[in-house]
Amino acid sequence: MAELSSLAELGTATAAAQPAAPVHVQKLDKSGRAYATGKRKNAIARVWVKPGSGKITVNDKEFASYFARPVLQMILNQPIVAANRAGQYDIVATVIGGGLSGQAGAVRHGISKALTYYEPALRSVLKKGGFLTRDSRVVERKKYGKAKARRSFQFSKR
Image 1: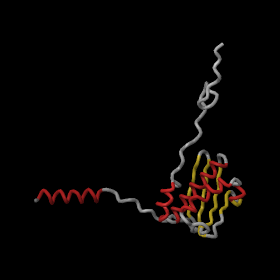
Image 2: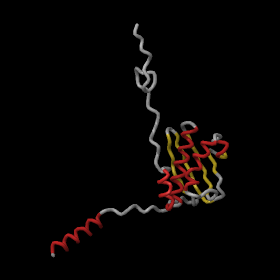
Image 3: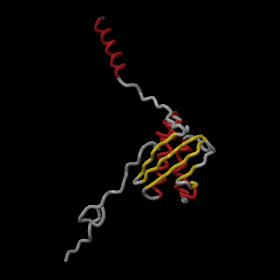
Image 4: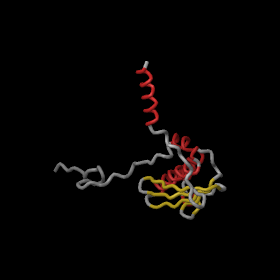
């Protein structure tokens, strides 16, 4: 019997020693905005989220004029639609580097992270959608002796 009680104490001791799941708290700056950095390919986006009418500004332009293609506009709206928060937050983003597709992905990543900082309850929804994961795929570098990263020069038999 003494052995059973010591085993039970050991079990509770190890359970107490294991770290609990991290508690996500709201992270706001002095102005009451949530800030996050999003990345994709070579593009880096700085994103600020605050309560508002749903206006999205990218590099001091309306997002529809900055990202003219409907696919890129849809990419930007994905985390907002998934979180069911359309028209509730004003989003300001500055993005540099890369092309338009990479920039749209970077802004989407930044919006997702900033939303979780403003409203930690949204984390599970955005994580399930895959919006919080940084897409690590980048262009492979060119190697010497090759035409491109992997493409060889045309082989000549004679």
